[in-house]
Picture 1: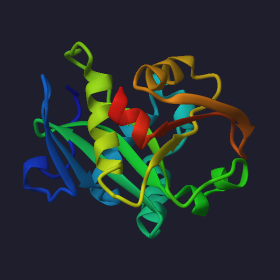
Picture 2: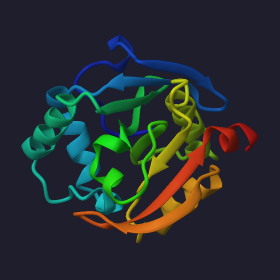
Picture 3: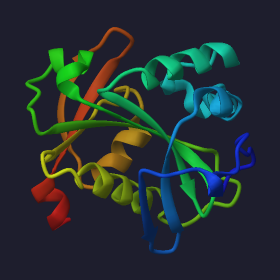
Length: 195
């Protein structure tokens, strides 16, 4: 899966969600621990492949401080993705009505937002991304009050936009956020259950 390990053994950390995924094995979402996980995250975000994440030039301490701030919020959450007890990525959720993106589209109370940064793969697995994203969406929609998933990748990130569309997301408008032009994408509960 990945070449960098987190400071704390993943198997001993509590999870907010667990599911056995076909082919991949056990998916667990672990609340991010900013201090313990900042070396791992910094290693991921400084890579060229993560340029759209917008943290390439940040120090380890700056990355830690950003996730400490996220950890202080009730409306935004960051999780370390564990697949078979190996770090597989960073998953963030947010309430669009309490986020700047909610100012550029008509956010609804049933919306839930996601950000996803996959770890670099050392052993690529066929269909890893769509299988993983399906598990993450099941987690988001496990809240019966949520019925639409929203994401806003950088509009230049064609690879991610195509991957989200392949997972059932539909294109919305391109919008200007403070740090980027974003491509809104949406996936309703009804569409997810049909795909």
